[in-house]
Length: 475
Ligand code: NAP
Image (cartoon, rainbow, N blue to C red; front, top):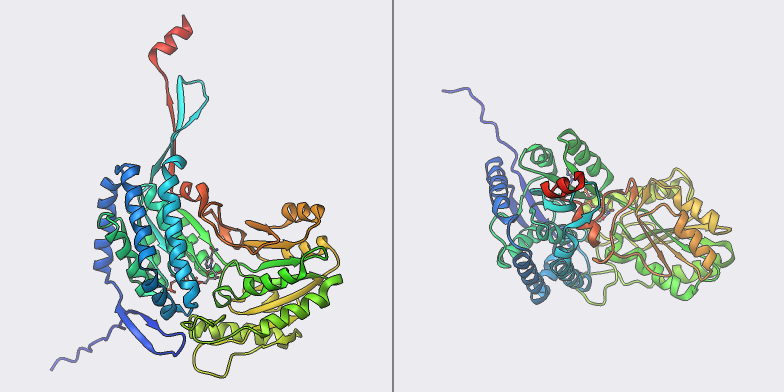
């Protein structure tokens, strides 16, 4: 009898676990190494022809992708809600916004990537933008459609092909997006989903056929992907976390500011990189703002995200809930004052109570880290300059907004705030028409706008010297 032991390899799966009930709803086997190899080979082969497809044809396919999103938003919405807990209302809006992103690049890509004339000593000089190849996109669960489309629409319109490694808790969304591009008429291999865990990302980055990588996610994941990309000298774009400040000055419309502050904090159940997380309020209006803000946070309806009356659904995973709970507990232990909530809700599902904290000690998680959930931190300042010092005392620099009707304060804010987005009297939001990205640990590179489509292209400088022109000059 053989004494050889049979070693059981762990089953590698990605799964949908309901954030509402904790139930395992669907499970998918991860793609094997062999399947991943085949997908990379297909991506590389597809790129060789796809890069030559004229803009008009790419554009027609991208418009079809938009049409599918619009037509089937009521099927995609519940899928997102079921996988990661966002409210159904916002999930349907996300499908619509993804369609908008597709249309934006379908309409503008050719213009953005047109040759640009330059002046040199040559007879004719110009810059030509060309696609670079298969781009790996490592994406997060919080906007499971929008995050992917805002990468994929410019990448495919530029003539690149995409490989998506989506977050492990949203496999149905990942496969649905692949299917949308297939049905829109893009060639097999133009956009593929890799069902793999994060431990297999570096292996894909190291593959010579992969031209570049983009990651939207946490600082830790960004550091790991940037290290792997750096080792291979590959272009990398990082869209990482944020702890956005929301500054309120005495000249602001306080009612509107408080109303928007709540929206800005609890958007996506509090799990948005550009959610306002730190509310920095001028002393003169501190009491009034605090009262209005806390009352509104207290009146939010927490519950089933499929219910259209729900304002705040469950957090995406049990781990996100555990992480947030630990951060809040530690902040309170270090001396923060609890104005509202402060703990998980005593019910099934990943629910955390809408929470407001004040007197946040420096060094505490609420001061230093990103809080991904419906937890707001309030700070007080004596003027715009102090408010900005507090705002900039963060490793992050993604979005920021200031509520003021004083032109001098506005200018000061726009110039001094360390962030990639600066909004006045409005909530920070992504929009296909303007670039999106951050500074400091919020990452580098930009998505959206014309900047977004220029991230993954070869900027080729062309100089042509006509023999005749040279001759006539020397004559
Ligand atoms: P995450 O844990 O970093 O995961 C994001 C993606 O990275 C997932 O696909 C994940 O795969 C993968 N990943 C995790 N660790 C990795 C590693 N060491 N190497 C390679 N890949 C790795 O982030 P998340 O919890 O999904 O998303 C929340 C974070 O994303 C927040 O910090 C938020 O602020 C940020 N975010 C930023 C933006 C922006 O535009 N700046 C937008 C949205 C979200 P697995 O799921 O398999 O672990």
